[in-house]
Image (tube, rainbow, N blue to C red; front, side, top):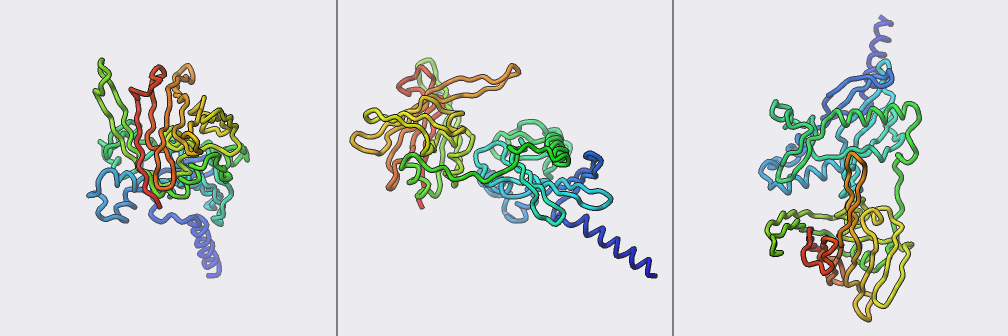
Amino acid sequence: MRMRIIGAILLVLSIMRVSAQSLDNFELVDNFKVKGLTTKVYFKDPFKVLIKTYPDFDSKDNKTKFELLTTYLHENTLYIFQTSRKQEILKSYQLKGNPKKVKTRYYFNLEVDNPDNTIDKIVDKTNIGGSFFEHMSIFQNSQGKDLVGKGVQIWGYFSRIEPYKDIKDNISNLIKMDIENAIPKDFIYKEEPIIEPLFDYQTCGINNVKKRVIKTDVLEYDSLGQISRRFPRTETDTELYLSARSKEIGGVTTFPYFSSTDKKEKKDNKIYITSILDNIKYYLKDISVTTFSNSEQIEKIEGKLIIHGFTTSGETTNYELYIAEFAKVGDCFLPKTVKFCPIEDVNYQQPRIKIEIEYELK
């Protein structure tokens, strides 16, 4: 009898060890080996969560649906990869959205948790992003499975259905590196210090803007120079600093955020900027800031926009003209109109992309 009791206790402890990580509403979707360790993969379907949270989700407009999905993905865990040996959990690897990574394609971090649920480390570089994923319930029928890995239009947005295999391969490689204690230091997430602003408009915008509505038009012209086709897109933005500091072209160009340590050279009412910030240097060069006469208020920012392309031969670089025109918004002067123009269009008459920005103040 005593042996049975001991056996029962051991069984309960074993179950507790395997269940240490909360898996509420997660579904087991895979089971494989990584360097001899059993690795179980669990997935929580964002659609099921959103429908439960918002019973009227299906009747909401497409823009609202996409915003709710995006917010959820940036704030929650999508997959958990759980490693174990002989029923004892070793680590849990949570693929978790980072809410600070706005306007960034690869916004997922990998949180590595110990068996007691304390955080061991957070991997910042996973090369994983997306909006729609293979294990979502809407892709589980034969028609949905055919869409995996392809780009399709959903809710008015063109999105790729992310294959699980790509995610599995990336996470498996990170797990192997973790087992070998070989994750590069620059992969590990670290809190970045706040960048001190160079111009007053940056501080004024951060302190006073509650929300932005960014209306983007991609334009085509006929032989007479008249607009022949227009491709509009509208998005909202409530994190001005994070958007400006992102490594995404829209975030950088709609609110250029310079550092107080950037080099500036003033000539009359123009200030020429050489930035030390990677996101600025990646998209803008030959930057000049024009102020209104006898004023410190900014009238416009001009420069060359760096267009990066990628081919089988490597990266290519092209240039366009860039201008951000400022206007008074409340007590601030802020970017209101942004244009990307062909390099020969020195008067900005035929922008390839035109962006109008509306602000809601606090």
